[in-house]
Image (tube, rainbow, N blue to C red):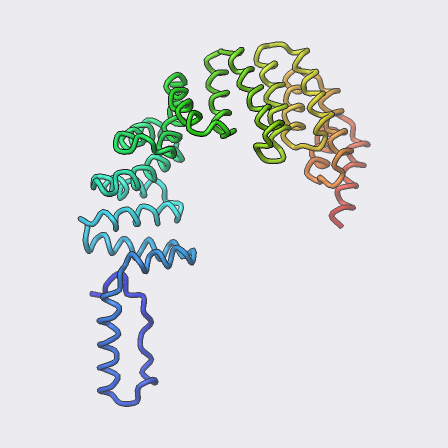
Length: 312
């Protein structure tokens, strides 16, 4: 039976004219291929993006030696790369039983559980990793996210504060704290956290170019959450004035006006967004469809013609 990691090409008989020579060379090739490290071959396939081939190779390697945690780990990793997340959990479970792979395979397994909406197992595995390596940031972050998904915000905040103690500049961690505080209805603390995030962006230059617009919307939505609707309306107007073409700002403002039943402001917001960014054909199409739904067929037709002309 052929070894599952034989990936050498078969010998072309035309390369060796003598029959016995062909037998000898072919035999040498088989021995060389059989001795090839399946892990090295699999990693090479993964580097090339040949995930299906890597999965097949590693499946055979695991069958050949199921007691090898390294093979189990890489088999799980290859399955993840091949979008087979549910299957990947089994070899990773087996791999992490070995102390040498508890952390490496455990983090991969916890992250996979999180991606498949299995927060309880994600929390359990991340905890197992942290028992071995308490300072592992990825495991702690995974556990915090799992706890938020399980509505265990208080426990999540403990993990998040540990992460921020180590690196207070992480906006994404601050945002998880913000979400947890809002869920706990600790609104004053949430506002203070939002102010701190704005300070990190404005004064220290942390975050991507869209960070300020995102925080502006978060502030408006915090007022909306508190049912301070007029204050929220003013906040959304300020965000639109400061970031008129920003997709998140426009979408959130449109959602706010739609929820209030203010059709006039909803359409006005879309019109201004198109004026601010006339090359955004998707937004132009959205406006035309909303106009048609509002019974403004003539204006909708004109907008659709604009889209057609741009695409022509």
